[in-house]
Length: 219
Picture 1 (cartoon, helix red, strand yellow):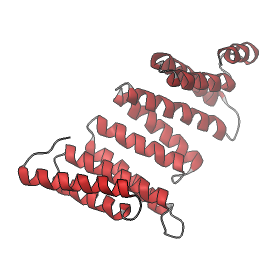
Picture 2: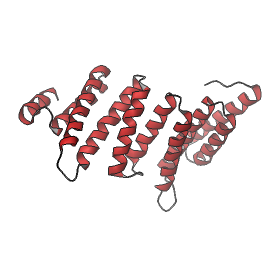
Picture 3: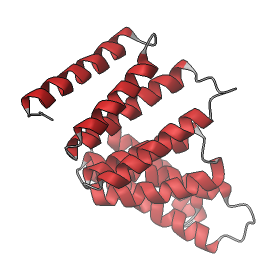
Picture 4: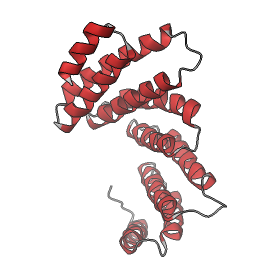
C-alpha cells in the first residue's frame, strides 16, 4: 500500500480521491497490526483528501465520494472509541451516519450498524437519553426492514442485542424498572431463537430482580 500511495501521489497529485482511498486502506492495515497511532494518522489523511475532493468536485453525482468519506469517518469513529476518545468518536460517527443515510437510505444494514455504534459512543459520554433514543431508532429500523412484517432470525437476534444494550443504559441511570422491561422485551425476541442467548437474558433478568430486592446492582 505504501508503494501504491507513492505512485498515485506522483501520478495523480496529493489530493486525488484515489490517494484518499489508499490512505484509508493503509489505516485498515495499521489497525490489523495494532498500530493505532499510525492508523489514526492514515485515516485522518484520507479524510483530508476526501473533504478536498468533495469541496472541489464538479460532478453532479458525488455518491461514490461521499460513500468513501463515510467509510473513513466510520473507521475513525471505531478507532477513536477503542482509544477512549469518545467525544471524537461521536462526532465522526454522526457525520458518517448523515452521509450514509443520504446515499444508502435509513434502513440499509450498514446505516443501522453505524447508528448502533453511535448510540454506544453516545452512552460512553454519559448522554444516556440520547443513547436510548438512538438505540430505539435501531429497533424501529430493524422492524421496518422486516419482509412482510416477519423478522428474520438475524433481525430478531439484532433486536435482542439492542434491547440488552438499552437495558444497560437504563441501569447506568439507576432506572431498574425500565431496564427490567427491556430485558423482558429481549426475552420475547430471544425465545426459540438461540438457547445460549436466551439463557444469558434470563440470567440478567434474575440478576436484576435479585439486586432490586437487595438494593444493589453491579455493572
